[in-house]
Image 1 (tube, helix red, strand yellow):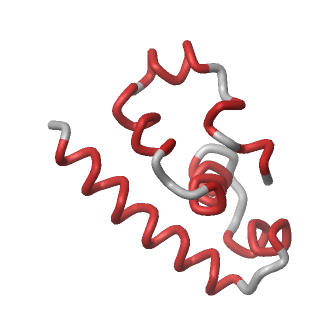
Image 2 (cartoon, helix red, strand yellow):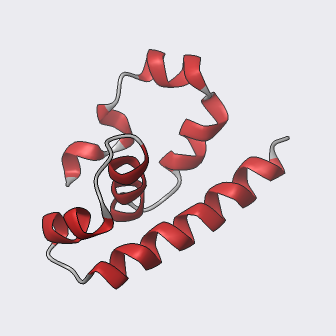
Image 3 (cartoon, one colour):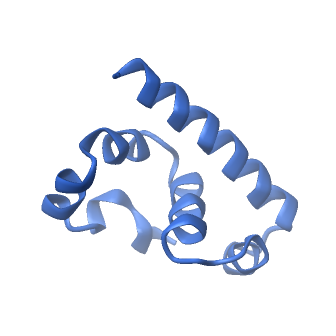
Length: 79
């Protein structure tokens, strides 16, 4: 899942779309960031993400929930 690290994305594109969002994503741990990107941008289901990581679906659901809370808090602090 290291291939989903923020540094692997096209930085110019990322900064052009929403620099605050991409900075906030960069502050998340790699698994949480990967799960958010995979489900939100790539269309994977929680079950598919769980299979990729070899964890239960509930673990992925927790990563997503905590990640969204952290993203929301980070983005609200910059607006």
